[in-house]
Image 1 (cartoon, helix red, strand yellow):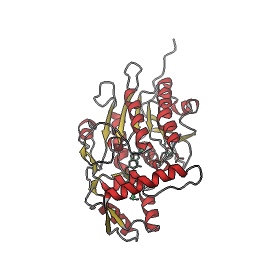
Image 2: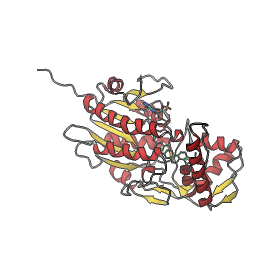
Image 3: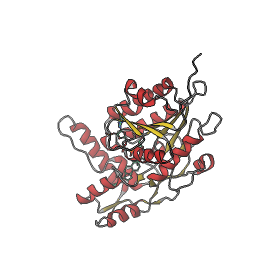
Image 4: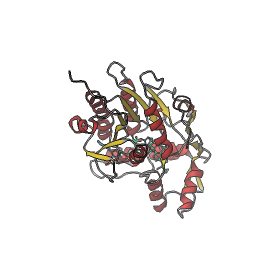
Length: 324
Ligand SMILES: NC(=O)C1=CN([C@@H]2O[C@H](COP(=O)(O)OP(=O)(O)OC[C@H]3O[C@@H](n4cnc5c(N)ncnc54)[C@H](OP(=O)(O)O)[C@@H]3O)[C@@H](O)[C@H]2O)C=CC1
Ligand SMILES: CC(C)CCC[C@@H](C)[C@H]1CC[C@H]2C3=C(CC[C@]12C)[C@@]1(C)CCC(=O)C[C@@H]1CC3
């Protein structure tokens, strides 16, 4: 009688492995002796020990070959928040994640680690040392957040010992590090256009920015602790630097370091938020005629003007996490 060969625990797939976080994760996994297959809509680099599968994660037939003989899947693909494209977010983050789960079940994958976001609990009001027990945002500010909530729920609810699929979600926040495609680039672009002269609010709001290597570390710890009897199954975990900083000090340090002036003049938060909302509505109404993307979106203004930092105590306790 033929017996089904259990895939090696050192074979894994990284969906979104060509992206910023995904590539850092792939590099670390290879260092740790994993054989990695990357699945992504684009291929951005080559690395010995890594096979690339190019395709759309909404296509199960395209996904399956990347999951062959794989016991562990990391899902860290998402459209960029800046696209603000409702249909795209729904298709990739919700329908696509359903497809990823189906493909994992069909391919006999044992572990699925999702990159979620701490923003799933953020709705524009202060979050101070927020734990994982905070409720999901009832009124998420943008489509990105709205679909990240649905995505996280899908993955955590897919934890099913009967089918043999163990799941966990990692919630990073404001990732920075080499090759970051959004935080520093958006900041520099805004500074170049002379839009970084103002501090939104009183400038004392404290937030998390998380170094990419810490986020990778959290993912790998979660994957290696994910076992049938483990308390982490079906749960979300915040991964932070455990060192919240003042938003506007961080922005100023980056800007000054790159030769731009630090923001100096204060604007009232409510006024800027209201203006950002108006601009967003205008862009939506005019979309069929002209396409323009406001720099100051309601989400960016909310992130720039409120406290949003999270506790990583649960990750320390259950994953043995400690910022590197
Ligand atoms: N960066 C941050 O501050 C934070 C990020 N996250 C989460 O971390 C994850 C990684 O983010 P990050 O590395 O910054 O983002 P990137 O955009 O750099 O990486 C995402 C990758 O997924 C790819 N992708 C998008 N759509 C599809 C699709 N339909 N099929 C296959 N691949 C696809 C992207 O390709 P392409 O570039 O061509 O779209 C890209 O290569 C995401 O889930 C994000 O929500 C969470 C918290 C904070
Ligand atoms: C234009 C300025 C008011 C702000 C410039 C900096 C911002 C581009 C970044 C500051 C906080 C960042 C952040 C994210 C994207 C880039 C920032 C808004 C995320 C929305 C990325 C995706 C997530 O899951 C959450 C992040 C929170 C922090």
